[in-house]
Amino acid sequence: MEDPLSYLLSFFLLIFLLYLSAVFSASETALTSVSKIKLKESLKKGDKEEEESELHLFNKLLTVILIMNNLVNILASSVATLIVVGLFKYIIPESLSALVTTLILTFFILIFGEITPKIYARQNNEKIFNRMIKILIFLSKILSPFIKMLIGISNFIIKIIGGKLVYEAPFITTEDILMYVEAGREEGVIKHEESFMLKRTLEMEVSLVKEIMIPRVDIVAIEESETLEDVMEIIKEEEYSRIPVYKDTIDNIVGICYAKDVLVFVSERGTEIKDKVKVKELMREPLFVPETMKVSELLKIFKEQKIHIAIVVDEYGGTAGLVTMEDILEEIFGEIMDEYDQNENVGIKKLEDGSYIVDATIPINDLERELNLVFPESDYETLAGYILENLQRIPKVGEKFKIGTFVFKIVAASKNRIEKVLIKVVDNEKEN
Image (tube, rainbow, N blue to C red):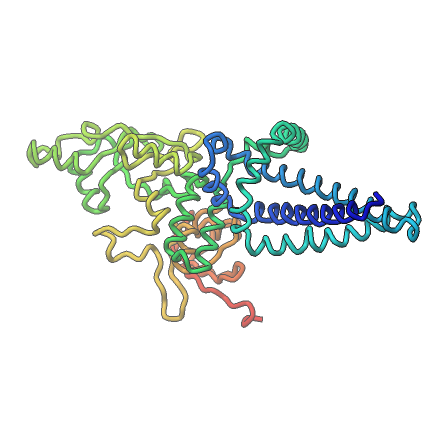
């Protein structure tokens, strides 16, 4: 390559290859930093074939970028070696020309082909992504056979080490959405209440029925041999519209008595028969669900069967609790007050000194939300569960103890159950 024109052309080719290296490096950063939602939306604008394989697109485009980036870097190294050997063959020994070329080219590739374009792409990821997406999709079609082979080999290795294959992993995960919601809340784009509802809605996919159910000990039920007069008295006192009906023990729920059924029956037949008709004559078939059922699945069943109450059973078939549509809605929207709840305070009463009297059966999630506190994560679901897990015993009335940053005092308790607790948050720094 003695012709000066050849050296000039080779030099311009080297510059062009460095430019391509910068483009593909920037594309790689843009692709990995742009949101998956943006990637999904851009894909919808493409052809139907690509839309159907959206789970594979990210891996395909990333493979294209890596192939092209390595290709241009190898070509750049070869061209640079030819230039150095040709121009400096009388100055640099041939045995050192490759080393000199590698050192010089590594410097230029790092500065102009890697560091600078990647920093720029990080700051302008959507702009670069929008410019490159069509080009990358076009290249992925040209290199499709080669890409399939490489992804196939990668999947084989991933399977051996126990990872998820491309087609097994979801394109956008719940964790991704929760991350966007939290970022939106921190930036002020999403209000705190909206953020709370969105998070709780998404968490329903993993929340279990046992986490939101009314426990067995709090169930208000009636024996099947009782009369309509008895159930009307319970409805009046407890202000519930649906009462479970059991035979012999609470573990044998045989039906659900609806207040509206009783009222319609009494209005049609007359009040004088309410002490003669048994509850079992009006009860409806109960819905039984396992305590390990997902809340989202139960909501679907409620909607399909048009019912609002279910009996929760444990692994032995005994009654673990009950769950209603209101319990599910409160998981999303927080405590819902109706006309009978207007004087209630969701089991929390604030005292003048800043401490709180709390119902021990209140769910930890509700307590965290209402008081803006954070409890350590564990298997407990209620305040009583948190205390029992830490103490490993049932505390007595008047007993005072400290767990973490909280000071607790048992206000009310029975032989086997904590009922009311006084909570005070301690500032560790002041205490020390």
